[in-house]
Every structure is written in C-alpha cells, then in structure tokens.
View (cartoon, rainbow, N blue to C red):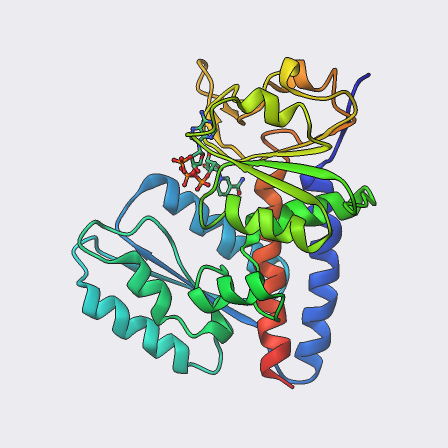
Length: 283
Ligand code: NAP
C-alpha cells in the first residue's frame, strides 16, 4: 500500500479562498476582521512565524497589526498592551507569540486576553469550552488536523484514535476534538511504557511530540491514517516531522507530509478563528 497524501498546502488554499470570500462579505457590511500579533523579543523562529501569520492575513484581506517589543519589556507593560487590544474595536483576534521571555508569566498573559478575542484558543475559557462542547475557539493546530480528516471524509465514529503527546496546545485539545467526533481516544506521552502496543491498535494516529522517528512503519496498523504535527530538523538541517515518512507511507492509507502538511493548516485555522471572532462581534 502507498498512502495518499493529505496536502496541507492545497487544503489551506481552498479554505483561505473561502475565508477571503467571507471577509469580503463582512467588509461589504462595513466590518474588516482584524488580528493583532504581539511579539516580544527577537527569537528568530518566532519572527518567521509572526511574519507568516501577518502575511496570511493580508493575503486574505484581513486587517493585521504586528506589535514588536524588546525582550526587556515588563510583564506589566505587556498586560497593559493586551488590555488596550481587548478594548480596540478594530481588533477581533489577539495572538501573543510564544515563547515569551522568562521574566514574563505566559499563562498570565494568555488569561489577560479577552476570551472573545482568543483566536489561538489557549485561554482557560477556550479550553473549558472545548472540554464541555460549548462555542469557543479551538487551538489552531489540532483544529487544522480535524479539517484534514474532514477533507478525506473520514468518519471517526467507532474508530480508535491514538494521540502521541499531551501538551495543552496540541495533544490534549486534539484528543478532545477526536472524542467529540465519537472516536475512542488514547493519549500517549513520555511515560507510556509501550507506545508501539498502543499505536498498532490505532485507526488514526496523531504524532505531536517534537522528536524524529517517534513513529515508524512497524508501529502502524495497515490502512491507518497518520497525521504528523511534529516539526524537527533532520541531519541535513531540513524540516521533518515525528513520523518516518518514507517507511510509514508504505503502511498507512493517508499521511500528512512535513513540510506542507499540518503546518500551513495551523495558520489557516488562525484566519478562520479571527474571521469567526469578527462575525460573532458583528451579531
Ligand atoms: P511539547 O509541549 O513539548 O509536548 C510534547 C509531548 O510529547 C509531551 O506530552 C511529551 O510527554 C510527549 N513525548 C515526548 N517524548 C515522547 C516519547 N518518546 N513518546 C511519547 N510521547 C513523548 O510539544 P508541543 O507544543 O505539543 O509540540 C509537539 C510538536 O509539534 C513539536 O515538534 C512542535 O514544534 C510541533 N508543532 C507544530 C505545529 C504546526 O503548526 N505544525 C504547531 C504546534 C506544534 P510528557 O508530557 O510526558 O513530557
């Protein structure tokens, strides 16, 4: 078997076209959705991420503001900026790029964002909404994974999904979203004694660890769907995921590549959440 690719670039393009159309419809009513991206410090990876997010907004017709601050910015000053953005009617989504410098309590900053503008979906209110099935904002990366499953019309009902990783931004919300779609969900982590025994039972595997080759072909049931969230560098310095792509694609039915898989979907879902925030604000 050779797995079919779930192409995150192509799917993103489709979804971003829909976003652009909805943005135009809102603009016609006099409302331009706006995203504020706040970057503190000069982490090179963060600089690339925020640039990509701002560009994606511009390409889809959203208003975007990039606020850059020195790494020495105080926590109080950052909290004051977040509060000002909470009050700004031209801004519907606020994203504070993580990681923040060590002297700033990132959780405190996230909790300062108005839940109505929490388009990253990291606020406790958003986590609670996901947990209880109430309306809120879903974290963009697992939300993007769900869209990828939807794109292949995968019915999760009665299927066994194994999520590798339990972070608050990927693994845990991923598991809750799969559960909401009636999958039976297993969450694995660094203290899972026999990962292979778990993954071999899975119809769907989501790898969100941050280590190369966490998932190899011998760990995958033939025909399983494999989503690779990981972002790592191989020996040549090239971007790669958590999954041994070349091996696993011979066993899986569908697989996401890295790059060009979950990564572009994350930014796309940020646009979707920001648009949604603006639509909610307009009603
Ligand atoms: P994280 O907070 O470091 O969490 C990693 C998780 O993996 C933890 O739960 C950890 O377990 C678990 N883990 C570590 N070693 C393991 C092992 N050998 N077997 C099973 N589980 C293991 O990372 P994250 O923020 O969730 O991100 C995960 C990866 O996704 C990273 O590569 C990150 O760069 C990438 N990512 C990509 C996107 C995207 O847009 N494509 C977005 C976000 C993140 P413990 O909890 O026990 O420590």
